[in-house]
Amino acid sequence: MICHLGKGLSVKDIKQCAEGRENITLVDKDISTPDGLAVDWVHQLLFWTDTGLDQINVVDLVSRRRRTLFSDGLDEPRAIAVDPSRGLLFWTDWGVHARIERAGMDGNDRTVLISGDSIKWPNGLALDILEQRVYWADAKVKLIMSCDYWGENTRLVIRSHQRLKHPFSLTVFEERLYWTDWDHEGVLTANKFTVLLPYL
Image (cartoon, rainbow, N blue to C red; front, side, top):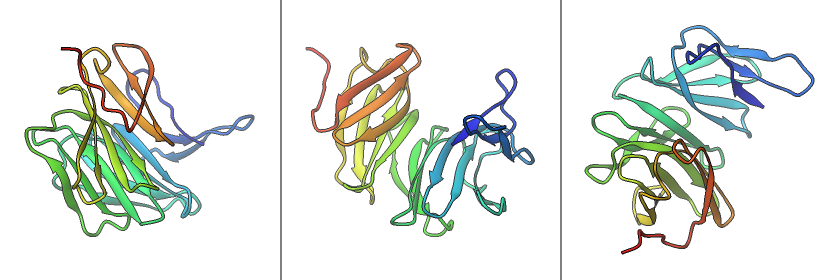
């Protein structure tokens, strides 16, 4: 299990936590504000976004060797997700030019999937690996959307100021989406196939 641990609001390390054992520090140097985490359970790799350094990094959980994959062209990298079966990495950036990007887990073939006026604060990001779809929650425009792994076939899942006051983290399991919301102070859920729109 991987966890963030730190003092106050400033998190300066990433630790591995296991029940009944002492926490192991994985990363504590050249780190500023680790935000999103994604584990490649096949190859034993941990990827993370660092909004303070504007980087995307990876560490091998066995050898502890680390590498910066991206340090250019990032403004506010936030959520991150990985599909080890296809060797793909996805992340959100809610900076001035908000977007969702994809690259190979080796750092090659970086491409923008979603950008423009329809995306502002993409906080949560989740993958449906079986369907090869990317889901994201946007806290500014109050919606959850999805697209395929190539940025095509976009679908609106939820648009609601009531249910999506400030969505933050997002995950998908089978037919359901689950997300946290800062204003609701809880976990909410919806069917990923049912479009939920505001009442007229």
